[in-house]
Structures are given as C-alpha cells and as structure tokens.
Image (cartoon, rainbow, N blue to C red):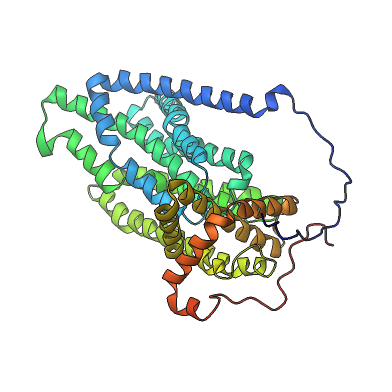
Length: 431
C-alpha cells in the first residue's frame, strides 16, 4: 500500500504542549445530544397537542396532509444549493425539527400571551391583533428560528463555513416552522368551513391553501434566509473581528424581522395591498436571494478549481481532479461511474471525497486570506487524510468525470494550471 505524501512541517504552537482535558459530565456529547433530543421531542408533543386542540382531529389531519405538500420541494431546493459542500444530515434534521417543534411552540405561546396582554391593557382586541401580527409575531418568530442557526454556528462550527451554509440551515429551519404553522392555519380554516358549510373553490380552506401553499410557500424561508446570510458572512470573518461577527448576524436578524413585518402588514394596506406587496416586493426579493445563492454556489466551485491545484505536485490529488471537483457535471458523472462499476458504497465514498476536497479548498482559501482559525493545521491534515483513504475509488471516477466534462482539454494534458512554485500552505503561527 502506498504511503501518503509527507505533510509539510509546521513550527510548534506558541502555547507549548496541549494538555488533555476531561470534560464534566454535562459537557459530554451524549449528554448534550440526549438533552437536545428530549427538548425537541417534548416540544413536538406539546405543539401537537396545542394544534390538535385548536383544529380538532379532523382539521389537524386535513391541515397535515395539505401542509406537507411544499416541504419536499423546499428541502430539495436547499439540498441542491448545498451540493457543492453538503453538510451532514444531522444538522438539517435538527434544523427542521427545531423549526417545526421548538420554534413553533415558542411562537404560538409567546404570540398568544403578548396579544392577550396587549388586548387587556388597551381594551382594543382588534388593535392588539394587528399589533401582534405586524410587530410581535415577526420579532418572536424570527428570533425563535434564528436560535437554530445560532446553535449550529456555535456548536457545529466546522460544518458552518460560509453564506451557503447559513442560507441552508436557516431555510430548512423556516421550512419546518412553516410546516407546523400551515397545519394550524389550514386546519383552522377547515374547521371554519365545517361550521359555515363552505365548500369548493369558495371555501376558506381553498383560499388559505392558495395563499400559503401555492403563492407563498417560500415566505418563511425567505425571511429567515436573511438571518442565515448574516451568520454566513460572520463565518467568513476572521476570529479577531469579534464586533463584525456579532453585528452581521444581528443585522441579518433585523432585516428578517422587518421583511416579515412588512409582509404581515400587507393586509392592512387596502384591498390590493397584499398583491402589491407580493408582486412588488416579495417576488423580487425571492429572485434576488435566489440569484445570490446560485452566484455563491458558483463562486465556491471556482474556489475549488483555484485552490486545489496546489496539492497536485505533492501527490495528494491527481492532475485532473481540481477541474473535476470544480464541475458539478464532472462530480455527478464520477459518482455515477463509481456506482455503475463498484456499487453504492463506492458512489458514497466518491461523494464523501468530493465533500472533503471542497472543504479543503475553502479552508485553504480562508487561510490565504488570513481568516482561518488556529486549528487550520489540524483541520487540513484531517481533510487530507480523509481524501487519501478514499483515493483508490475516487481518483479513477473523477478522472472519468473530467474526461466526460472536458474531453478536449483532458486529451492534451491536465485541465488546470498552477504556478511553478505552489502557494505556500497557510501557517497560523507565522507573524
């Protein structure tokens, strides 16, 4: 078996040897995971009981069946956006569960309490409802959803490296929140139709379904994505830029609250206010954020093509791999090739190889810009080791993917260019 290329040598850290640290029982991973799962499970049971009590069993089932329709499409869209450097499924499951259970519970309890308190204090129930929808709800709901992004940012930092990660986590969290909220609204509308005898296209259920599921399934993901953008921009900042790393998420959260409030207040702008806000504001914002997401994804691919050639001369990567890893077509072809010749485990290994290589390129990019953390050396070695373990399966597949994606270029040699003297690897202890 071939040995791996030698790692570059680095000077020792400025603080001497690392001392082993034995965490307290409450700091152990299984304790944190157990507490989190218990919290989400209890929140789910409570929110289930509250929604079912308000809609009734039949209304709950109808609302559930209709609310689930946009969920697969929204999750598929965010997964597509995350294909360049896919995050682990556990982060997405946590984000969706937090939005559907914990954030929804916080919102329904806090909104109801605040609205009732305002109605009692002002003796104006109608004004309290308007104030609750346009001010209280945006603040409470966006803060509750932002908590999931904050938790991933703090405790899964290696999986949170840029704008795309922030948008994906925020979008999945908001998708879960909207799912639970839609059950409540659609189930309540169905109950209203049962009492009034409404049916067909003129029913309250049909109108609610058209507005929330057909016209604006992207509303909550759109709002919370602004918070995710703030956290993503903070992730790209250097550790020493502490003020920037705090202000950017707060600015994103404030934008999300403002946009949410503007959308909720559209019904108070007259008969056509809702459609004016929808067509003149929501749709353009959706288009703008969609363009930003696609542009960021393409920039990540360009970073892969520009950074990975530095690892070719040392033997860590094959000649055509930087191009193949920077092309979604070549990456997909490589996975298909591995699956066809060696089965699903090989395709999964190639997918992991692509993800690790992308993480390595983005890590190196941050390092060259002076924005990598103190664990750069350790993280780089971990990623290179992961690539080396999978090279026997991944290299032939990626070579085939490169030939398919750029047959003319690969016929005459490597499909990339790198300087005669590779970029120096980042050294966090260099003054």
